[in-house]
Image 1 (cartoon, rainbow over the protein chains, first blue to last red):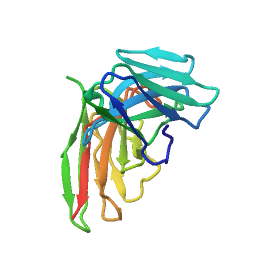
Image 2: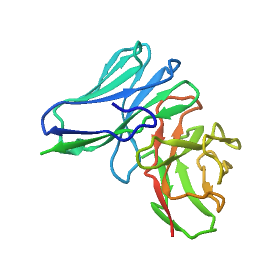
Image 3: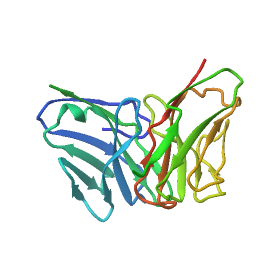
Image 4: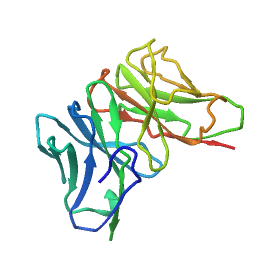
Length: 110
Length: 113
């Protein structure tokens, strides 16, 4: 999984499979988390968010899970499609500032 | 459509030159941010502005300057004091400081030639 400052990890999945991207956050005071998708040469796009009073949130084909005990966040993408290929990174917000992970590069194999 | 517009998309700077990156938003957001993105690293905060006519240094402000004279505009100047300016620069905004979802522009890629 990703964490601030580490090398960019990569994940390759077959089209149609589910993808799981992980993120370890560091600040136990963080109360809001976002997953972003960034395509090459473009700005990050919001995917899904979750507050610290929740442990799971679902969107269209995406689910975010939050485990506050171990400070871990994951993004699950169902039925991964070629258009999902991008860098995905998490962001934590302490109510004061955002802190961003380095990202995971997802490649979908047709 | 509301959003954030960064320009130009690509920018080339000669050694010793100052260049200014534009960031405009029509989301009526109070807070705006500038981040720098380098390969294999997370976004690093350069400057932020909580409200018009106010701005604060972020984690890597040296060699950069900003202004916030209008709510919708937050230009970033990369000065000659910035020794390694080649990077992808991202502007973002939130409804308020410490607010929730950050909206990003499409970025400006700056290259020193």
